[in-house]
Image 1 (cartoon, helix red, strand yellow):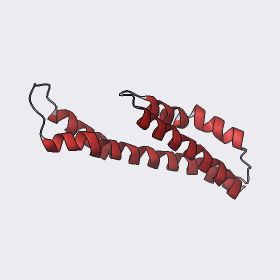
Image 2: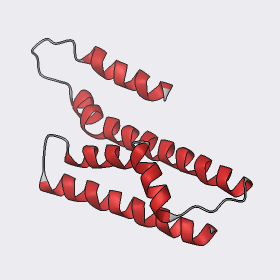
Image 3: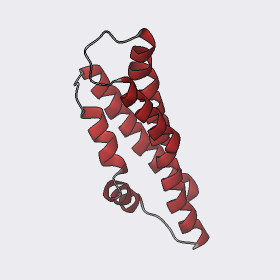
Image 4: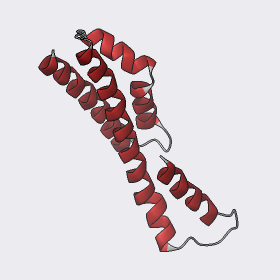
Length: 118
């Protein structure tokens, strides 16, 4: 997470508020690299968070129901953050569709994982 914030800070330092044409490197970084880094860390955090919950249940010999895990993911903010990111401005139908499809696939994969483990 520290590297993400460092890259975000570098991006903000490059944008000092002055009106001038941005370099091509800056545009590429801002439009392509920063979103990829954000998605990478979001996916990594979700995996660590979810596996921590599932691993503790496996160690305690508990069973996890699908409604409980979906409620857990909703209350901890993982599903709402994915939905908010899918619908955030600038709004584009393609970006929102991809975000909502990825959220649906995430929920589908969590349900599949629960069925596989329990």
